[in-house]
Image 1 (tube, rainbow over the protein chains, first blue to last red):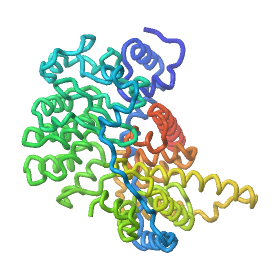
Image 2: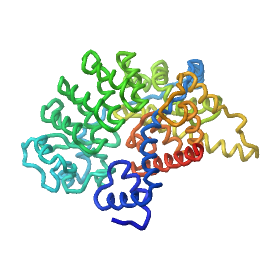
Image 3: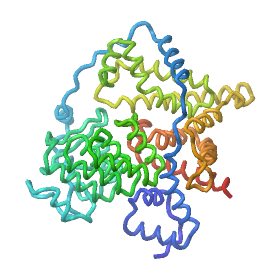
Image 4: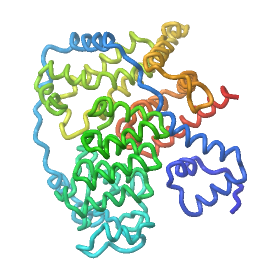
Length: 292
Length: 192
């Protein structure tokens, strides 16, 4: 397939994200085949993105930080903020306040659907369905591929693109609370199997990361450790390996986990991850984690 | 005491708990400020401004929200405000304030303290490469530079950065892509 016009910026971004599919991907790759300088740039950008994690945080002296804190405390107004923190209403109460809830409820159910097929029959194990359709994209119930931000409705509620409940129930994260639920089925084996499947097979690294976070939060046991060790040592994306490494940092009493950190320290291609493994091994618990 | 408890107590007026919150996040907040604000004294001012605003805003903060995202948002906004004010000061004085900068200093100190080894898989020594990358980062516009720092220094995901900046994921991706492309171009110039 030939292409005469240069690829759009969005094509570059989507390709780097692994989200460029179908004719757009073919056209982009045809362009790269004819323009080696662009192909080189793409590779440079990919490796730069992975390697820039070596940029360190500024080293700060304790004296500098002590001084900064002292200045803040000295400047605090005499009286503290008189906070009256009302208990937050439950997720369902907040949802029920939305007038369009009944009509939207069906649309809110983001099923992990087999390709172009409809929602599974109730009770059908989701992980089995996923395994049957291992090459299909995860899709929303209306069949549209899940993309960043999703539909206007999804954007409003910031619904995550991953539903892991066998009854196709919803995992929702409201923008204002950052909370989410898996309908209380937090240790359900089906959920665990599905998450494990996603960690091992999903093509979207972000979904793999999300699944690792959910495994860490809601599941436990040797099987979970094995899946996380797999992600930590085998996943091709550094961010996913990092997520798994952080998820396991409190499990160093497990020999398999500890050996995996040593393997990461010695073999991981990312300097930042080697450093992370070193820190976790040294501390026996783990370094301060950003963003969690 | 965990973060939630510290927040609750600080909301109730406990300054010790508030100091505990500061200790919990001081390296991330000051780290971001020092990466952006080039002068150590200015960095202290911005840090103070950030945490005073946190103190004053704590009453409205809801515990079920993400504290670090809120904190980063305040920090980013104060950094951008500092940048605007600095631009106005430079115009007022008609001379650049570069002489007050000690940006090079923190980078060199960081390189030194981290014991960065010269051997590297990269075409240049790692320390030298860090210097070149950082010089390239400094050519980014303020927002791109902050996004760069959050992404690569602080390890935030696109989703988290979009919450900090209150902008769509797609916009963050575009700004990050342009930033890295610009850095690549600068590095390429320097390597050739």
